[in-house]
Image (cartoon, rainbow, N blue to C red):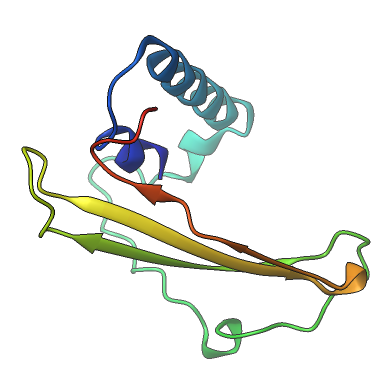
Length: 116
């Protein structure tokens, strides 16, 4: 998401710093968790595509954790935006924390004129 969003916003020094911090932290996480070991060996057959199980779709019963939550994300992309980038991406998120009686809705929008 960060990579896609950074491609459609106005470039700023602060945005560059934030992107590099994100990149450095994610790369360090790969190293810390030995994520490269999960990749298939060079020349190995392509692994099967990951597919969600039918029981993973939809709501799940809350777990016992105090901050148990569940979120759904809906992405949309449009190529009908005027201007040099001619692309617009938006995302809506809905979640809930049932043990706290909270529901969350967010709809940030990303576009060519949004500052980083």
